[in-house]
Length: 455
Ligand code: HSE
Image (cartoon, rainbow, N blue to C red):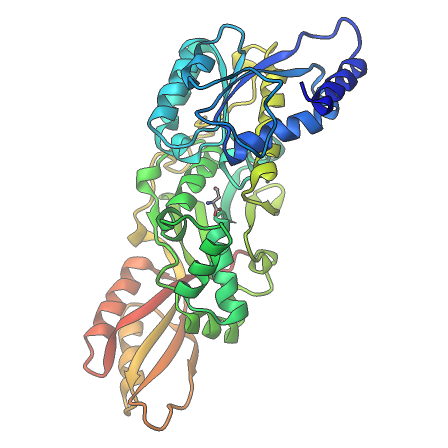
């Protein structure tokens, strides 16, 4: 045992009174970034953690295919067989930090079948298999906790299921992918193209070599459905999220947005409407004056609006070894606290239908969504073009709220015309875009980005 860990455990033992509850025995699967961060933070802060929890938390086993030089496990029982942890009779709580959805699903189901509680940081696993896993956990009377799956260190899951429990949640909107936010921030602040900003994100280790999950919105969609299931008491509906990434966002759109008083952010939005729940991930213009519009770099933020509390904002690091470990440990402590509570009296973890108002099982088709739009149209600089565009919009019941057209450069035939529209149904806007793109005076495609006031 390292001198540091030894000392830490002694302190924690001293701080707990005799006759205290026995330690909670955890097994950690995966020793990557989050796993090593969790081991390190648990060793460093074990005194405070034990005091707050009312009992010590012992790592009785770690399952990892390889060691991680970023953490010292010399004093711990490490196995290369991850399933040993899920089958270990001395483990009360399995902490799944291996990622992926195939082995991780099997591992979690094994742990549940063995009557163990589960803590996971795996958003894809919860978003795609959560309904199955929660049903299995309910059957066994065990808990699955997943604070670290959404927005890293921000305690948004606890906020939704505990802090805001008295509210009817109306909507939430979040910057829930740090890589995407970093890229958009670089594009705005340094005038970089998407490709340049992505390379920079890769060089700094924010973006993977294959950045698809981050830049095409899949990672954000995973996180969004998890939050929506808690906010609205609906099943996890990952396959119903409308998902659009940031790879099509151009530098000039960020500049025009600035000129109009907006920032472009990649948002995950969930909103309760009378006809169903909106679940959508896409680049969005939001007013510069909103706090969330000023969340930059890799930071995450989530706005949640409840009927009693009004809008609330949660901000912090959405990734990173120790920020995510902070959420993992919060869940371990949460699970430890509920061990003596009957399963039906624990804080519900997901999918509890709150009421029968609104079709909470129904995800609204994207075509029925109502928002304002930013449009950038490449038009020939000829008389009558704007009136054609305005007529098409007005025929679809869409009014033009703002317009930018700069003088064309001398040798340019095409000029960009930028419009902000009134709120309109997506299907009508799409029809207008189709008609505008068919005009001979326009060069397709029309760039279209949704606008949200978030007020
Ligand atoms: N890849 C994620 C992001 C972090 O960039 O926000 C983990 O969820």
